[in-house]
Length: 268
Image 1 (cartoon, helix red, strand yellow):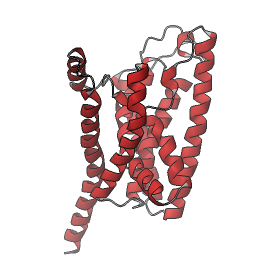
Image 2 (tube, one colour; image 1 turned 60 degrees about the vertical axis):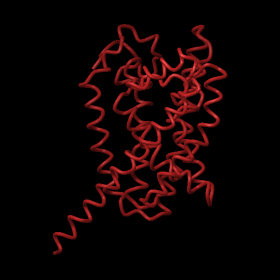
Image 3 (cartoon, one colour; image 1 turned 135 degrees about the vertical axis):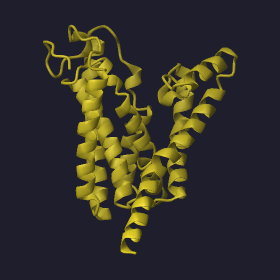
Image 4 (cartoon, rainbow, N blue to C red; image 1 turned 45 degrees about the vertical axis):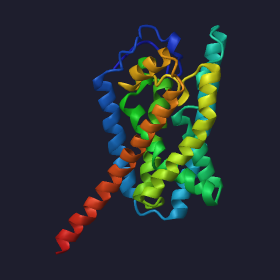
């Protein structure tokens, strides 16, 4: 891990000698091992939590993440603006991982269908976004392991995965196909806000415009764009999201079914 002369809250452009050294297999694996061991222990401790307790945890985490996001945005914007870079519009909460704030707050303070669909997204899209970023934590490209920039990303995506799995482990969310569809519908609804923003202002929030950094699909999107068929990129990304929603929810569902079968066999 990078050991340079820097303070915890130093901004990326002020950390001399760092060019992404911690974006390596060793550092990434260390983070993943610590995260998943901690996550498993917490889930074991909280697995029998009643719905009211789970709801409180959702509320606490969603409020905490919202405050953390505001603080990080102010911190980063201060450096960007004072160093002549201007405001970074990619700090706006329109990427997949930012929607944990919206879904968490809606789940915590709303009732009925709004809460139901928010909970469904937390147990599907939230896990998907958090897990994908944990595996490829791009923050290490800009910030060393022991820095606020890296810590923010490590903690944020850890809490996304933990929160989603907690809802599944405690049966707070029904483990059935309807949950996948409801979570995906929530995703589609917020996408209807994001897609126009991507195309009007030339961004790539939720990867709908260019499918940036999505293996194989990024190249396909580039060819569609050069052929004047860029409007197909969001459709392709929505299909990819749909497939991933199934995978991310069916894995814990399958494990739970397998455990039940094993228990039945032992009783026999």
